[in-house]
Amino acid sequence: MITDNYIKMCGRAEEIQKECKYVVGDHFSWISNQEIFIYHKGIRGKLSKDFIWLPTQGQLQEMIHKTDWHGVLLAFHLWYQEFDFEEITSMNELWLAFVIHEKYHKIWTGEKWVRKHSGK
Image 1 (cartoon, rainbow, N blue to C red):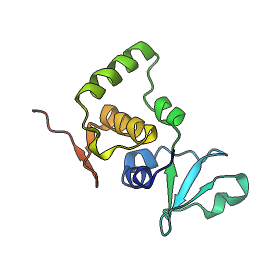
Image 2 (cartoon, rainbow, N blue to C red):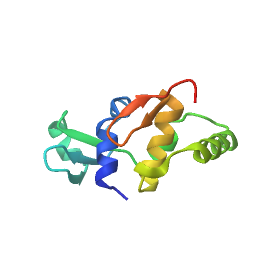
Image 3 (cartoon, rainbow, N blue to C red):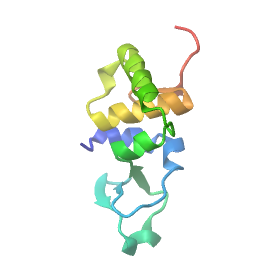
Image 4 (spheres, helix red, strand yellow):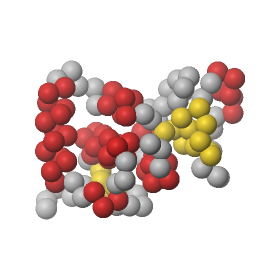
């Protein structure tokens, strides 16, 4: 499910936006009105910084680049036990938060991504 919060999270995840390869069928949001549309070959020239890429759960999971899926699921489980779900309302948001945590050591504050502190 694509929520307004997921659009905001994706829009503020600069590292994730840089990974977009513009694959036919990808979802994007137009920043000015959050209208959702699906990428197709005919609109390639129209994509710009005014659009936010909204990766699917599958695309997010591919970003982890691990062949040991047992290890990924274990890491997800351990992270999930300590995660604060107050700002998360969908599985897309949950997977995005996990990927950003694993790859960039950042957490979602409800407004932005911030580097996770080393201590508790």
